[in-house]
Image (cartoon, rainbow, N blue to C red; front, side):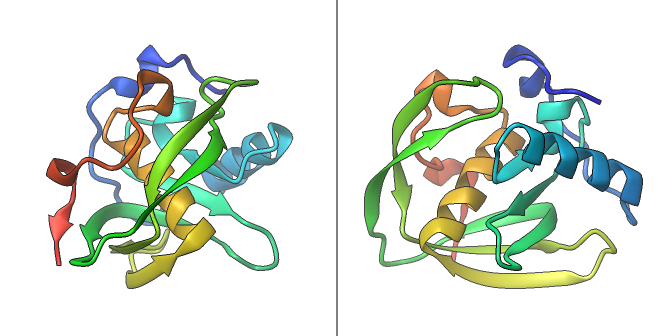
Length: 151
């Protein structure tokens, strides 16, 4: 398993089946950490399934499978500098929502429903873009409202 090119990340994805093999998650985690990342979507390493991992440190890590993003009624945006493992060595100024709601499943198929703020919301939005075949290198700054459901 390795990081793939930007064009290879834009292939249509399948819903993830459960459970996800621990070896896959371990290898993705190693790639993410070896490249100093805090998130990695399955399409970035050639898996054409709807899941991603994240690790913000201090126990803030997880797996999100078949996630669906919900936009809050009250939306506040901010600008942040981000990198992306798909385009190493580059940074982009991106517009992000401060608060999001994400529903999905963990690696074992157990459902979750989170309201996320700040850095966690930022990382989840970034990885959700990869699941939609988008990348900040394409000028995709924010999660498009067409890609998200309303609360």
